[in-house]
Length: 80
Image (cartoon, rainbow, N blue to C red):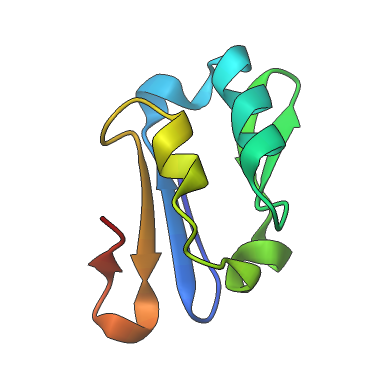
């Protein structure tokens, strides 16, 4: 699953998008509410994407490589 704002895009691997524990964790750690827990599934709140502060908390909370934050203003560079 991928959703794009004007400056930031977020991609969540379909293999973990249905993980209820991960959905709850992402919702909890994101300081700008980019993630929501939609019936035990990870959901991305499009209206909040460009509020991303590049804090990496979502990357640290998820299995390696399953969540990607893309800097659309920088040729889709992946936040590492």
